Length: 376
Image (cartoon, rainbow, N blue to C red; front, side, top):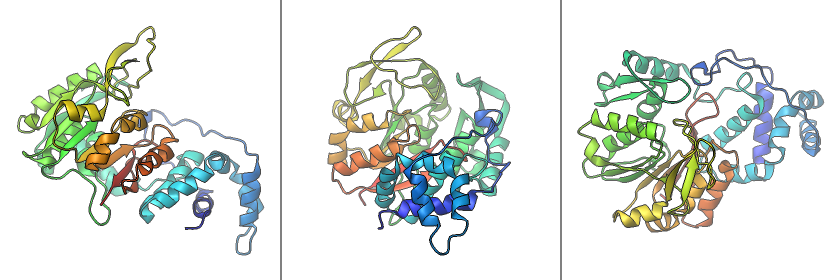
């Protein structure tokens, strides 16, 4: 693959979106009222490089495009070498195209760039899940003023009931956020799998995984936030046929076990704050995936999902023995830190286990980018 393949694809993407002004590309239910667009400046050698490429025969008005697009190329300038490397690492064209769109979206914003998830089908999917959600039977999420509705998925062909948000439930059970449809086989939990659910939140992912692994499988749900744990347990009680397949671990995933970690509770967005307590911080003890597997005498780990608010790389480093021994399928969130797009696949590649990488995204905004990896 050419060393400037990402750069050329990104340039074409920016040019194709320059004059957009989308009015249906912002999620107010998640982020509140739409803000004004930010404007950044541009200087530097990347601008000159882009000008040179666009001024080649067949590219019209290159200087004008460069002047208007200065924000986009400032954004990628310091990451360009790593973006080229990641682009080459990705195993299919869908992943490569998505990487380009995600970077253009992050650079230019929702008024200019639409992500592939923004489709009429997905919007209608959320409407269907809202239709089976109670507006009277609700509980507090402890985050952003959200109220979780009692949602009965039976009429949608899923024998599960839970408290959640319609749009997040659609992600889990409708589009299946932690499933990657790719060749030669989809990356997902299957019957009999042992699954580690890192950052289990309200338990929706655990219930979905438990339904997929069947009676012969097992789900280890790792979560430490008290509000999330209370909601999770309530959701498990609503599903007595699935509850026995799920085991809750009240620790924080890390690269060392036994550390006392401090945090300020913020619902599903709770992040670890390190070893020094703040005025309102509470604490949790860390655990590695390797130690979980050892102490619980798990026969194997077949699938690891992680959405742990930026601690994914550290947690993966605490799973090195598990990765080497079992080579599990992986679904790792990389959207919390831009560096995770690069650092996480680079770490996994450094283990030389033969992982192939796929990128998928499950919202119309920057959240919910998942790196999938498999050795098959």
